[in-house]
Amino acid sequence: MPRNLTILAGCLLGAVFAGVCVFGSEGHPAQEPVGGNPVLKSESALVVLDVVVTDKKGQPVHGLKAADFTVLEKGQKMTLQSFEEYRADQAAPPVPPPAKQAIGPNVFTNITDTAGNGPLNIVLMDALNTPMADQMYMREQMLEYVKKVPPGTRIAIFGLSDHLYLLQAFTTDPAVLNADVQMFRAQKAAVPPALRRVYTLAAIENLARYLSDLHGRKNLIWFAGSFPRVIPDGDQENGFGAMANFADDMKWTANLLMRSQVAVYPVDARGLFSNPEMSAAVGTPPGPNSQLHFLDQVAHRHIGMNVLAEGTGGKAFYDTNGLKEAVQEAITDGSNYYTLAYVPTDRQWDDRYRGLRVELNQPGVELFYRHGYFAYDPDAPSAQGGQALPMSVMDSAMLLGGPNPTQILFMVKIVPAAGTENKLPPNNQPNVKKMRPPYRHYDVWYGTNLRSLAFTATPDGVHHGSLEFEALLYSASGELMNAIRETMKVDLPAARYESALRSGFEFHQNIAAPAKSEYFLRLGVHDVSSDRVGAVEVPLTAIPKAPPAPPAASGK
Image (cartoon, rainbow, N blue to C red; front, side, top):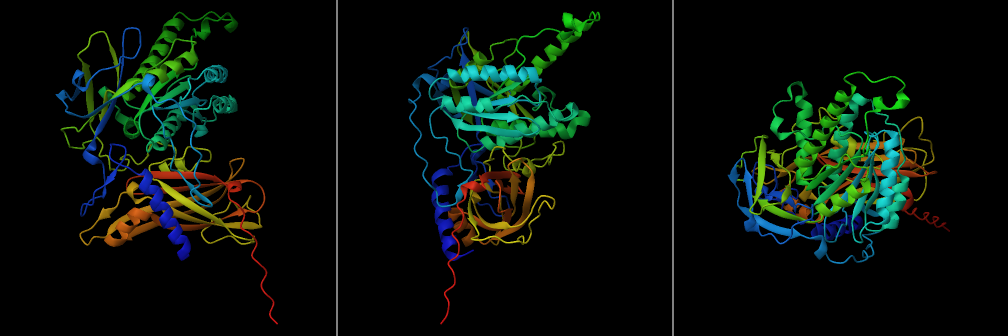
């Protein structure tokens, strides 16, 4: 790497990382060098618990104190380390977002700016698990809602088909939200019914990774016609039998949602509906057990929705055609809450379920909070290794149009070559049927925040780790055109490690793209030890072409 670019990247990364990487909660790790053990540690393994309190009319209850709450874990009273109330009626008035400050020429990052008061709201419009007719109704209801969205409400919109994709990052602009809901199109699921659960689980896990570094509570409002089981019922944690791998995936996803402070509000996109066999359009009379079977199916779906909501601290909405009202109620509930935090007395990370109960010394109220968690070591990688998921964590993070996971924060500087070439750089893996010269080469310089990574420190002071760097080139239609995937074993002496903590860890790749047409680069970093990922997507049109090299001076 040229020295001037090294200095630029180092200063740039050091300044940015010093400003944003303030760690110190269950989901935001902090560094603690310990000889012979992973360096990445979570401060005190703090358990953060959001509690929504409503009265008999469903209105938020304000003004409660820490002494009013009792938190029990496995039946034992916990000592609160912190307590805070969040009120929508006392939130600071919305202000226009500041103009984005340029980081540097051709520099991009997955660090997300979500500065502001109050929670983040995510609307997930699920085409994978929703009939096409209900998808259209869901879209219409969302268009009605965004016309009257309260000022200052921060919303992001996602879609789900065979993968999770981002329609709109967090914004408070109703006009922008309206335009992006318009982009949602009803579509028939391309995933076989038998695989929809695993694809849904992968999408929810990917979403949790995207939200992991964003501060505060997130309300996930999930519209679907059915809700595959993506988190386990804590009371049945050991009853999965042959589904052991899938159960481990669900436990891990539940904990990712917990650490990312996500409360799920499942909304039945079908609204009020009746037994289709009772319709005159069917032409044949229903069987004697038809209605009983229909009611049993409906009850089973509602139980699943309630398990999802109770397991994350949200609320389920069904048997209503007022989908837009459900969105507003979910956002109102999720904008008025109390955050309680404590350090569990049981420090044994045995992967078992720990039930939680919150008691309040006030009658006539209803509490909404997650009812437990699985005691995974916060620093351990995914125990199941993704055995039941359709793709690896890295493959999921690198899908075109998906959210940019923020478990690993990094920046990239992309430098285009001045001219074009007919040859590809080393290590490129082109789509031989699609890639045609002439090519333009792009140097990609990564600067990775070491505070996001898990390194092992040995007694000699050397820090060891393993990182995967991946650059994928996609066409505008979503075809994979080119790829470069490299794994790097990292061994940093103490002095160099301390320096890299301040400036970032650097890595270089060179990838080519056809010189004509529109393409996208998806760039990712994967920490093999902790299974954490980070990714960012860059359209090549955002990268100014390098000026042509000046002609060589003629000698006389």
